[in-house]
Image 1 (cartoon, chains in turn green, brown):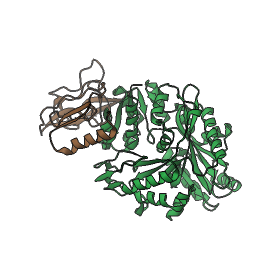
Image 2 (cartoon, chains in turn orange, brown):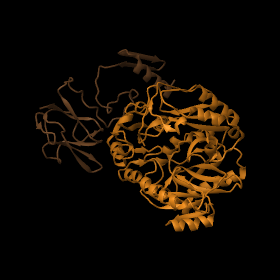
Image 3 (cartoon, chains in turn green, cyan):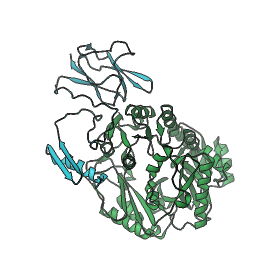
Image 4 (cartoon, helix red, strand yellow):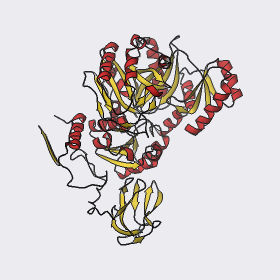
Length: 444
Length: 150
C-alpha cells in the first residue's frame, strides 16, 4: 500500500489523512464541490473533486470513487464511516480493479448489512439474541408481539446504526406503525422487510471493538458504553462501561470475538449489544463493518491507532499483538459537538464558523475539521468535532471534558455545547451508567 | 522537530490571512517560502497547499491558462472521469482549436467505470483552447475547453 484514496469528508477524512501520514503513506482526498477548500483537502497530498455537493452525486457514488482512486494512482480506498463505508458494492468494485478496500470482505459487509441474516448468524454462533423474527403482515406482527409482550421494537432489515426503528407501546399502535415502518424501510433502504424484537426498557448500549487480521488472529479492544442517545443517535460514549460487572463485561467481549471468528470477519469492526440493566442479560444487536465515530475512546484507552491498524491489516500485515497485549488505562469519554439547535428541536444549524478554537488541556483530544471560516454545509451531517477526554478515572475525564466544553469557542452556528455540559454535570450521569432512554426523559 | 497537523494548519492560516504576497517560515530543519499569486492554477488537481515535496504523481497539473479573456467561456466537466477527445482511439477528435460549435455539439467523452458520457458544448462559438489531456482524469468542474462565444 502506497497511496490511499480517502472517500469521505469532515473530521474522519482529516483523521484518515493523519493516519496516512503516520504510516508514511501518500493520500488523496475525494471531495465534493462543497468541500474543495476543506481541511482534509488541504492537509492531504492532493484532492480531487468527485462531484457536486449533494452526497448522492458525489460521496455516495462508488463508481466515481473507484474511478478517482484509479485516476490518481491510489492502491487503496478508505471509506471512513457513513456514506460508502458499508457498501459491499464499493468493496467489490475496488477489488475488481485491483484496489484494496480498507474494511472487511464484501461478503461479510453484505451479510451483516442484512440485520436479519446477522441475527441468524449470531444465533448460530451461540450468542444471545433478542426474541423476535421477520414479520410479513400486520396480523403476523400482532401475533408475535402478543407472544413477546409489549412494548416491542419494529426494525427495518436494511436499517442499522439506529435508523429504521419504531417503538410500539401497545396493540392499538401496531397497524399504523407497521405500515409506516414498512413504507420508510422501502424509501430509506430499498428493502421492505421488517422484523419485531423484544424491547428492553432499562437498556444500556454496550459495544465491543474487534480487530481481525488475515492470518487467523481475532482480538477485542474492549467495550464502549454508548447509552447517552437521542433518537437512537449516540451523543456521549465512554469506556470502560461504568459499573458493568466484570463477568458480564468479559462474557460480552468473548461473545463479540466468537461472532467475528464465526463469520470470517477481517479488519476492524464493532459488535453491538444491548444490556438489560435490571437483569444483566445481554443480547446481540448488530455488527458494524467500519471504523466508528467513537473509535477515539478505544484509542485513548488502549494507546493504539485504530485507523492505522485498519490500513495495516488491509495491506496483509498481521495484527502484531495478541489479546494478552491489549491493556486498558484509565477512563475515556467522548462527546459529539454538532451544529444543531437544541432550542428548536435540534434542527441542523448550517452556517460559516466565525470562531472555532478548542483549549489545549492535558488529557484532551479534539478530532475536527473545523476552524474559523469553515462552512457547516446543509448537505451533510452536523458533526463538527469530537472532544475526547482521557483521565486516570471517570471523574477526571468528566472534569477535563466539562472544562474543554466551557472554554470551547464556537461562533457562527448554533450547537449542542450547553446540552453536552448539562449531561456531563447531571447527577445521574455523574453517578455512573444511564439507560438509553435517559436523555429523552431528561430533556422532556 | 517534525511538523504537526497543528503546525501545518497554523501555517495555512497565516498564509490565508496574511494579505501579503510573500511569506517565509523558518524553523530548525524546516523552511518554507510561499509566493502568492505568481502561478495561477484553475484546478484543485494542482498540488496547491500540499506539503512540499509530498505531492504524488499520476495527475498532471493542468497547464497555465491563457491570460483571462472576459469573452472566453470554459466548458466545464460535468463529472469526474477520464477525458477522451475522440469517439474511439484512432478516430479524429470531436473538436480542435478553431472548430465552430453549437450548444449541442458533442465536444468530448467522459468515461466513468466503462460508462461513456457524451459532453455537449453548452454554448455556441469557436473552440480557442483544449485544457485537458486526452486519456487523463478530470475532476468535476474542471475546464475541458475554452470557447469564444459566437
